[in-house]
Image (cartoon, rainbow, N blue to C red; front, side):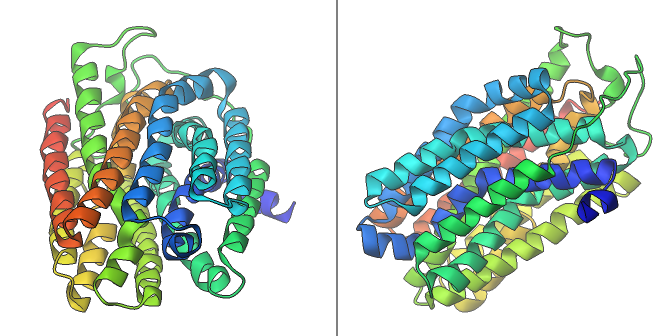
Length: 402
């Protein structure tokens, strides 16, 4: 009750979206952080780990379009509560998995939670947060990925190394329970035909006044969404392997498993700060949201190349760039969409999120195969290639900026 009294209006919507998305993606990130323990006990390799995570993102990709449409029709509160229940069910199966196949089943069972929570969080913010604060709100919501990886790193350090990996999954069920309680009801904001929401967003954002009538979308709108979806696909393919394979890559480079988990946790904290910071700068008009996405993707590419060196210095600096730049752009990309489609953000967000899920499916799968059959160095170079492709696609979003 005290928490509800303190978190009112837009803050409640922002925190509710954050916790719901954390619950949705936590099963996947926790599996990556626990990978060495899981592999030792259940007996599977890096390729199998990549396949399991790829399947989870594949099902998320298949369901996320429907998840966005469901959120638009059912409302964000109901949708996000249902998402949290799916995540909790998947985590229970993961905690009790006696073999690799059941582990994969638990990941797949949790995927509707991820597929609904991602666009659902965007809709909750679009309806519950004022235009002048949406950039920071989306930055906080997108920090859910970083919060999830940080919680995964902490859980693996505190619980997996003492009580065992099953307890880490069990503790994650509590996060899903908190999500059910934290999602607020929001009142849909009145629509003002032709109103622009870019007054506080500065230059270089897609103007909300370009939103088409219901059921229609201009060719420029569609082209912008396609470019954003490709950006999401390639960018996610580049960076999704960080959460899944960073600890294993550290182990392969001769570093202690605890070092990899500490870097995972530290990088996640950096990512939280960067996503919120970029959102605040976008709200104040100090940065061009579209062009900043391009620059962050390029900086992240440098980080993947440094990770490929296999040295302690390269590992730490590369992880900092990968987390702080290569993974900090999604909030800005979704801000572009929410500003352009402020009264029906679920569907376009769902389409872009589908691209991200496809990238998050393809990236870890190929990363695991290359790491297993060639080397982690080659796998990081592949991530750099994905990063460059994402930067090129992001330039397409800039071209369709009006």
